[in-house]
Image (cartoon, rainbow, N blue to C red; front, side, top):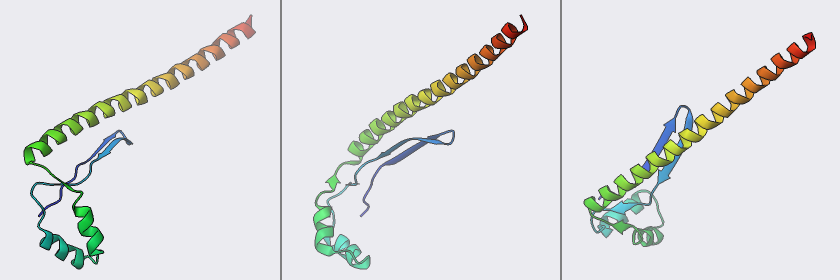
Length: 113
């Protein structure tokens, strides 16, 4: 019995652009005995553990794949927007530095005349 979740992390350059984490899902109805044994093995509070298990969605692999495809596309879109923002800020800094240098040159030329 495997509980699945989606965790997508996109890092561009050294900056973490996007983290998308979903809730957990199951592909089959949970085997309560299995989870009860897992709870005991890991010293969980069994009643609340099994109660939480009731909130885990059971989906088909096809539904899971469709959701994963959508979330992946969304993560790519967000990463592209983040990268564009980073590039725009870097360009702004370069423009500001260029303007600063230009002002210094103009000021030096004014002082010569």
